[in-house]
Amino acid sequence: MSKISADIKEGLGLVQVYTGNGKGKTTAALGLAFRAAGRGLNVIMVQFMKPPENYGEHIAAERFDNFTILPLGLDHMKQRVDKEDDISVSQKTLEKAKELIYSDEYDLVILDECNVAMSRHLIDVDEVIDMLRNRPENIEIVLTGRKAPQKIIDYADLVTEMKMIKHPFDKGISARKGIEY
Image 1 (cartoon, one colour):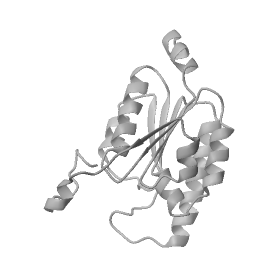
Image 2 (spheres, rainbow, N blue to C red):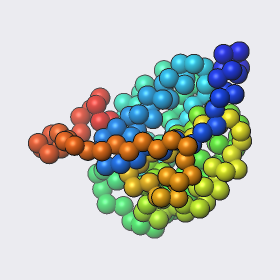
Image 3 (cartoon, one colour):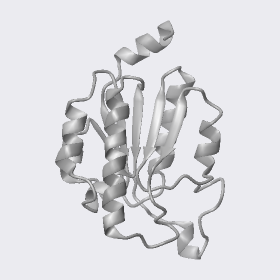
Image 4 (tube, one colour):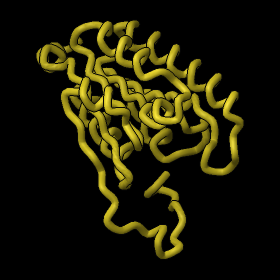
């Protein structure tokens, strides 16, 4: 690790939450990821509710040696998914997240849509908090997604709520390649 990365790493170790019904939670986490990767930190984004498809962030992350996106979720945007499948996939995703956090290979770990998985009772909030409490020092964690449970909000060091005021969906404009995905 370079000197600058070692200096930066000493200041890490907080838990951030991006929640709310507005657009921009994953986008904010990606901005943080690109900033951290640009400074030489090792970053991984584990995606709970997104499948391994051709999302713009996946294409962009491939350009970095130190930023990985691991989409482990089911496609909730295009199909209805069985609750038992949701629970199974979410549990496996949480186990993989724990493995990555405890590996000490990453400086920034983003758990994308983890809040949604907790709010839908697909993974246990207390288990997530236990994972956060027991993580190695100097690992920054970001949890994204709507409806962050109150226990997570209380535990976190930083909580940002994205509030929807107006959205193109209201005008019938669907998700656009390169902007929403």
